[in-house]
Amino acid sequence: MNYKTIVIDPGHGGTDHGTSHGSIREKDLVLDISLKLRQELLKNGYFVVMTRNKDIRIIPAVRSGIIKNSGGAICISNHINAGGGRGAEIIQSIHSNGRLAAILLEKIVETGMRRRRIYSRESARFPGEDYYYVIRDSKPVETFIVEYGFLDSKEDRQRLVQEGFRLELAKAVSRGIDLYLKDMSVVIVDLDGQSKPFPGEKKQLISGRWYLEARTFTEMAGGRVIWDSQKQKAVFDFSGK
Ligand SMILES: [Zn+2]
Image (cartoon, helix red, strand yellow):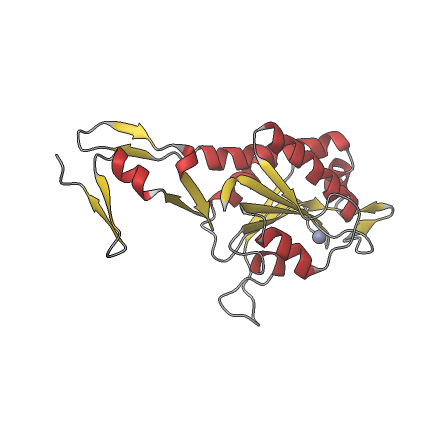
């Protein structure tokens, strides 16, 4: 699992149009935002896995399976809302630490879209699990459902139908992901009091938590790792100084 791979899930597709307003269909808008987001992420050096890159229907098990097996740490599931509200909202896992969703919504609001809310929903059928299958069944990848706006809100719709605005939304999400991953710098202070940044490629984001490579951490901090092959045990020794 690695944080350089981002999964993009354009909601709906094929015979599943999602919500619609006249000839404007959610499945088309979110595919377009997703393809633009893919471009932005590739430009920033990320790898991208997509659940669909054309107008096809995918059953839930396939969708969540692609995300789950992507090798990535984060999935952005793109949607457009309906039902009488206005603005952007993000649904995060009930297990999420809340940081990425906060940054993403911040960046989306900077495009001019109204802030609605960030929330999570627990399943009644599976207590302790998420209500939305795309979040629940794609673990350990952390999936965020991004609802960019309401198609039945005139203000939102006028923005969402503009290709240039959809590009702004894609850029906003890409920037948000980049900020979240790059700003989480880890500094190691060694036994001499020297501080050095922990190398990005030696840390991994798994289900919203950062994990550092133990050997790199220990050696940077001035210790050493001793592997006892007989006992199949590693000892982290910081007594050397
Ligand atoms: Zn949707």
